[in-house]
Structure formats: structure tokens, C-alpha cells
Image 1 (cartoon, rainbow, N blue to C red):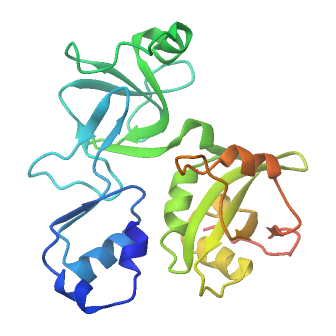
Image 2: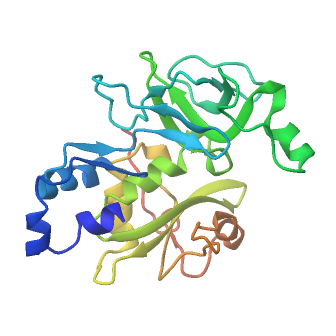
Amino acid sequence: MLGFIANAPDCEAAKRCYGQIRAVRGSPFPPEIQDLWRKRFGVIYAGSNTYGLTEAARVTTLVDGEPCPPGSSGKVNEDFDVRIVDEEDNEVPPGTSGEIVVRPRHPGVMFDGYWNRPEETLAILKNLWLHTGDIGRFDEKGFFYFVDRKKDYLRRRGENISSYELESTFKGHPQIKDVAVHAVFAETEDEVKATIVLNDDAAISAEDLCNWCAERVPYFAVPRFFEFRTDLPRSPVGRILKYQLREEGKTPQTWDREAAGFSIKKR
């Protein structure tokens, strides 16, 4: 919705809104779309400045009077202890991505467990920490950054790749309506694929889009596969079913940059 409104055709109603909207929040919210909201509607605050989940509400938020860096979701609020850990539950240093784990600092601020589901409760509350299933990191100043869902985090040829960050980049393209970045198996290992829904009036090739992407992300994160579709598979509540896209893998409609002889320059 953030992208649809920002890129909608100009009209008198939109012009009258200028200066009336103080803050717009959402996720993902790439810088290009934030800039459009500021220029078109005079928004002062635009970004994704909170992180939370059903089991623990909001665990990070903005700090009054302290500027929030681009891409950050603020700092941990006083009700929670939040750490970033590796696969062995060891805390990792600032700047390193890992699983986000949470525990309450006060009684009654976090859920006690799932109703009549003791095994799932024990699994998510491993070592007395709520394991969110999300990947994040802190910087040296304590600002928090969401990286990806753990199950969607990609590893290709020794490099970690965030599907969330790649999707945020693609959603900044004016001709893209929606996108899902996911892994597909090819030859001997997983490769990255972008399954894309274009706007109705879009006219762009997979090769052009690959070039556009290569100018904005690290060389190792540029997807090998691109595929255009009219829609993405979704659950009844509208969530994209990435597992279905992973299972479908490379289809006859998929463009393969390696097969096309398209090379990415390291930079």
C-alpha cells in the first residue's frame, strides 16, 4: 500500500494532502518510497521504526529526541531483554546477524505459552528465551535492524543473503507491483530467484531488471533467476507462500542469467 499510494497518479486530492500527514510507518519501506512520501505529501517521519511479534508485542521502538538511522527499528524498550545469538545460542557482537531472542524484564509483559500446545511452547522458549525465528542485528550504538525471517534467510556460495532486504530493493522499482525472493535448487546448491509481479503498464525485461539490481546490491546477492507472473501464491490471509515457490523451482518461464551469459561485476 505504501508503494501504491506513493506512485499513484497525481490528482487534486493528493495535492491537498501535502503537509497534513506527519508520520507514515510500515514495512518494508525502502528509501526510494520514503523519499516519495516526503516530496509528494510533506511527511516528516517515514520508516519502519518498531519491531515486535504477537508473543511479545513491541520490543523495539523509537527513542524520543534521538534520530533513528535508516533501516533501523529503534532501540530495545525497557520491558524486554533482547539479544542476537548464533545457532548455539551464544550472543554475537554488534554488527553480526543472528536469531533474535527475547525475554521479559517484568511479569506479565510477554506470553506464557501456547494454549494446550506444550511441545510448541517448549520449542519457542528454548533456554528460557523466546526464539523469534527472525534474523536481526544491533549496531555499536544499540540501534536494532531486522534482517529477515530465519526460514527465508539465504546462503549462497558462502555468502549470507537477506530475502527481506532484496525484496525491499526491488519494491523501490517503479514498475514492480510485488516480489518474492527465495531459494531454488540448481545443479549442486541453492540459487536465488526473484519471482516478480509487474504493474499492468510495465515494460521491462528480466535482463534490464537484473542490470538495475546489480547497481544496487552486492554482486553475490543478485538473483540468478528471474520470473514474471501475474500474481504470487498466497495464504487465505494474503501471505506469500514462499515454500510453494521454492518447490516449483526453475520453470519454463524462468530467465537464467548464467544460461544467458550475463555476468556480474564484483564491486
